[in-house]
Every structure is written in structure tokens, then in C-alpha cells.
Image (cartoon, rainbow, N blue to C red; front, side):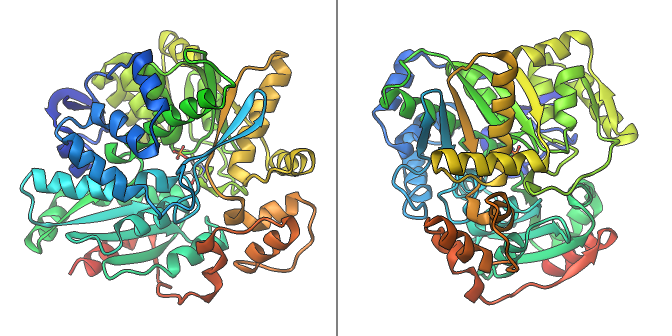
Length: 493
Ligand SMILES: *Cc1c(COP(=O)(O)O)cnc(C)c1O
């Protein structure tokens, strides 16, 4: 299988090349030329496998240059006791029609681990397949969780270095501390004086600078990304939707072939897009519900076909969704149109005017598969409190946004369809907001909130979060957004 850029369908590359490059030379994102399809027997067979086996089967369809043996080794190393439960991504059944797919049992307690524990292994294998000898240097712009997950994934992986930029005032105190205490000899963490979009734009500029690439090449380095635009990030996320479906079948609630909806708290549109790929492959998914917080640019896009980032930027208690440019949407637009020039036009308009409008046919094609909705911070906290009181289940702020949007849609439609909610973070990662939602009054900040939430709910915190307060802070630097490239140059001496 070959991969094409979303902006120019001309040149094609292999999966390993797409993973090495991260982003295409024309600025587009790599997508598989055709989406593989599976039948009921494929899904039935997955039902009898553990998470690793499911990963081998699903990834094997996209990564043809990797032998099954190679993929089995990679999956076994990636999804092992670095996750705190054997199911890796367990399905928590909330009620008859609602299941919560817990994607946060990895080392950083957020869903990005699902991809970032495996992606560095896919990347280093890809480098070997292509005879690359230079050191791959991963640059990441993060709204919080990606950065830590990438650092954990790449720390001390031979032949790699990693540098993470995060918005100085756009991540939670726990997220900041998680990154500042990162261990490993090949890592760097730097704050940017700006918001997430500033950090992401800065990283994109560095990638696009060919002169800088030559300088780095002369030092034995080349740049790649671990952001959700890398195909090596997206492909592993397809696996867990299959896994959730199988677990629900195994629990006896749905029968093989029954259709389910997916409801996904969305920022950069990666997680939900992986669900869309699963649907297109043949997983019985009815529709995908794209849940946003007050930064509801996607809700408006799905409703009107106009993507307009010219709007106030809100800092919310679900910071990983505080995003106005959802990069992975570009992949959907390409897959629905097959027209790279048109997509390139939209992206030029987005970069220039901050806005683009798709035509009616494309808007309808999006609406045929996606529903959108958003909720306020207030409603998100109500949802957390309500679920805890009524069901004894504790959700983080991002998951609660999805839960609330789903409840609203069900109320509006007066109908309930079996739905899997993607749960993207442990509630302990956003302890302050969760405590508030439970009505607790606290003067604590940072890691102490983890203990306090644990004491209040009687639920044990994930080990890496519980021990955060004792770890040594290693990184305290920040830079102006104009000086990000200089910081990279200093790291890659
Ligand atoms: C990254 C993240 C999201 C958003 O996922 P996208 O793939 O960017 O849409 C939601 N919740 C949490 C906790 C995250 O870390």
C-alpha cells in the first residue's frame, strides 16, 4: 500500500517513508491511497484476541512492509506492563447503551500513550528499512498531553532525540510538572510565550525551513514529528475502536454486525478520524459524534461547512481540546473529495484568511457521517458531578465534554443508540477541575490535588501521577515564539 499527500496526489511513498517524514514536502498530510476493508469474519476473529493481537491484525493492513512477526514483537513491547491493566484499553460499561473506552491506562495517564508507546518503535524500524543513519529529531508542539506522552515514548530510544514545546499558560500544573520532570538523556522541554496555536505554528515553520534543514543535516540530524499528523500516530488509534467493539460484543450487549455510534472529545481531530477510518474499513459504526468545548470551531464546521478560526480563543478546563486549527481535518477533506488541489486551496485560505468554506456536497458528505456538539465548562463540570453521584463513575474533564454532548443529542433526538465514548484522560490528570466538579473546596494546587481527589473518592491514583510531587524538576526554560528555531538549534548542536 502506498501513501499520498492530501495536497498533491502525484507522488506516493511507502508507509515507512510516510512515518519517517511525518509531513509531506508540499505541506500536506499522508493518507493511504485506498482504505483497506475487512469483513465480519475479520472482526469475529479479533474478538478472541488480546489487545496486542488486535493491533497486529489491524496495523498489518496498513503497514505492509512490516512482517507479522515484526509487528507482533513491536506490539508486545509497546502494550505490556507499561500499561496498568492487561486489557490495555478496557471498556467500562456504564449502562445498557453507553460504554466508556478507557484510553488512559498508559504511563502518562492520557490517550496519547496508545499511539506514542508504539510509534517510536514503528519509526526506528522504518528508519532501518530505509537505510537512514542520521539521528531523527522529533519536534513536538503540545497542548499538554502529547508532549509528555511523546517524551515517555522516545526517552532513551537509540538514534532519536526529542524536543517538546508547550504553551506557557495553556497547560495544567500537573501537565507542566509531568514534562518538567521528564527523565532521559535525549530529551528537551521548553515553554513558549503564547498559546498552543503559536507553538504549533512555530514548529510548522521550523519544519518548512529548508536552509535550517541543511544546517541540521550537516550536524547529522533530520527533523520529524510525533504530532497527531504523523501516520504512525494515527494508525495505532484505529486499533482501539475495533477493540472496543469486540469487547462490547464479548460482553453480550451487542451482536456482531450491530451498529454502534462513537462519541469522541476532539481537539486536533486525530482520535475521531481514527474512528472514521475504522468505520470506512467496515467496523459497524453508525455515526461519529465530534464533541468540543467552548472552542467550538468544529461544531460550527459540521453544522455549516464553514471553518472559521477567527474567534476568541478560550482557555478551558479541558485544555487538550483548546484548539482552533484541527490539523487532521485535512485528511478527512481529502478522503471525501480525492482532490488535493482543492484541499490545498482550503488550507491556503485557512493560513491566509483564517477561514474556508466547503461546497454543499462536501458539507453534506461530512454531515452524513458526523454529528457535532459542544458544551461549556460549567456543563462539563455538571456532567462529572452527576455521573459520580448517580453511577459512582469518575470522569476527567475531556471525557465529560463528550458525555455531556452525547446526553444533549440523545435528549434532543428523543432516541438512544448504543454508543462508545472515548475516554481520553484519567480524572487525576485534571484533579483541580474534577474536585471542583464534585463540589470540593480546596486550597491545594498541582500534585497535591491528586492525593486530595484520591482521598475524596476512595479511588487510587495512577502510580506515575501519585509520585509526581517527589520528582526532580529538570526543565524550566521558556522562549518567545519568534525564538523557537534558535532553541532547536541549540539543542541539536
Ligand atoms: C489530545 C487529547 C484530546 C484531543 O484529541 P485529538 O486527537 O487532538 O482530537 C482529547 N482529550 C485529551 C485528554 C487529549 O490529550
